[in-house]
Every structure is written in structure tokens, then in C-alpha cells.
Image 1 (cartoon, one colour):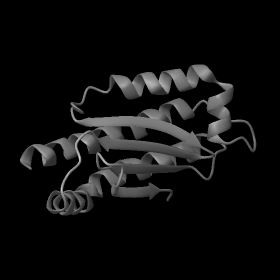
Image 2 (cartoon, one colour; image 1 turned 60 degrees about the horizontal axis):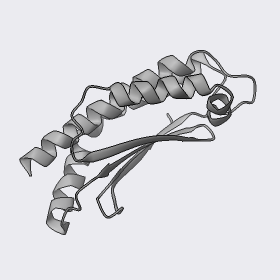
Image 3 (cartoon, one colour; image 1 turned 45 degrees about the vertical axis):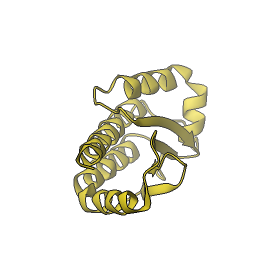
Length: 145
């Protein structure tokens, strides 16, 4: 279980770094009334750069499959464990996510604020979902300030 807790801390680092990277890429600006999803679809090079940055983050995510998607003005970061944890382990993981999310919360809210202030995108959200290997939810949080 200690390995799982250390891995979960690396997951927080991964998402925090990604959130900051997204702010940098989104700072190029969107057209009026354009959603983040539309901006990404119209600028495939931006999507490629974001996905490349996401893939190059040097954090050991062994045992976790990360993915990134966009829906409207929501950045969806999904992290799915390759292993399915048992009920007693799930309780420990959920508690650890809740107790350790403060630093992570700050980074995600900062990224949302920075994206909003540097673009016309005023309803940006970052949604982080962590799933057990069987697809059940371990922890989900949406940041929209």
C-alpha cells in the first residue's frame, strides 16, 4: 500500500504540471465565443504540443494510464489504475486523495485562473478523475474557481 500512496503523490504531480502546461499553451488566446475544445480542434498543432507535453512529463506513472480530453471549456484529465484495488485499499486511497489534495488544488485553481486571465475563455474547468482498474471512481474533482 505504501507503493500505491507514493504513486498517488506522483499522480498529483503529473496533473499539477499538466495544468500549468495547459495554461501556457492556452495563453495564445481564443476567438470570441470560442470554446477550448473548438480552439484545440482548429489548432491541431496546439493539441499535439499539449499531448506531447503530457507524454513527456518525467514522473513515474507505472501502473497508471493517463489520458487527456477536452469537452467545451473543460479539460478532462483521466488517470486509471491498471490494477483493480479491493474495497479496503479503495478506502485508503480515497482518504489519501482527499487529505493530500490541497497543494494540487492550488495548482489547478491557479491554472484555471491563468487561462481565464490570458484568454477570452471565462468558463474554464479542469476535471480530474482517478479510476480503479475496473473503471469505478476513486476520486473526482472539478476546478473552476
